[in-house]
Figure 1 (cartoon, rainbow, N blue to C red):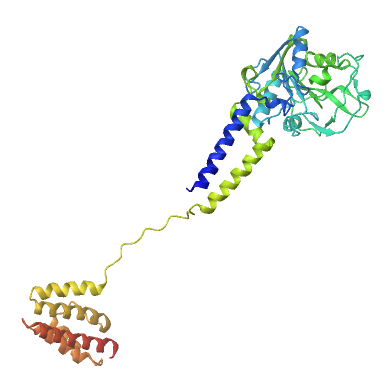
Figure 2 (figure 1 turned 180 degrees about the vertical axis):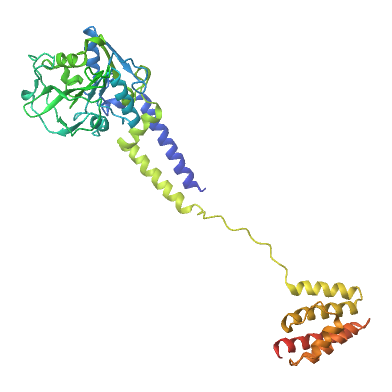
Length: 411
């Protein structure tokens, strides 16, 4: 690694340290407001004011930081206000089962100031036979429905950005018909949906779900306007059997026990993608990765194992010749060459190599193939040779090789 690369790595490390220190000594919320509809958030989009108002009226508000409805008693109202994290399918099943056993669920859709434009409880709405329809509604048209049990004389200053619409029957026997709570002449803004069957005869539903099309009515900015707080408290404490027990879901806002904020990693990540130093750091990091890809070694699939090279036959023959030469075994050398010739020639001529040397030579000499008689004589001389000098061994070997080549290849 050269000097320039080392300096680049050091600069990136120093930049990361500076960002980390800056996140610890500054408040990121002063730059990016927290738009979660949480009871821990005191800014305009939070619902901490509603939590305090409920406590001031004698109700029993609390927070749930575990996955709802984990361990939650059914004689309570669970509020899921514009969740900023997805509600999984298994959680939807658990929430509806808890409601069918007698729980009361208040589901609030996100408004224009929510932390995310994604409606994370679309599946839950669909299971209730409802869907959202985007439309801007003036506050003068909003009124409390007759027979809803709420204060119909309350003045409401609420300008929702969406309304509710009923879908076709989804075939859930536990689902009752939606009853309007807050509406206009042509739009539903809050409905009550009975859910479950307490005694199994279909007469008395076990629980209920209250659905609101927009969270503006509950947040800190709009709660203090007109009689909004009266309507909000009435919606959350309408069931007298709960004795004012209202539980706010903080699990789907990412909060932990005591309203703790995310750790250092979760704090740094938003700064990296939302601030210009963070984006500059990402660009520098990307350039460094491209550089490493350019100078790095490219690795492919593993190479096959190298096979052990076989020694050449000429090398083997040379070693065997030297061995026989040093042993003064001229007769044995000629017999080995004759036996090899009979094995090769026998495959071409149809003669068995297991025949005796004399019988093989006799049958070969009787053949009419050109060169057969000459090869038979060369074999006989090689087999009959005794202990002769090296020069004689070489001469007989050349005659045998010449006769075999002429017999096999005609030359």
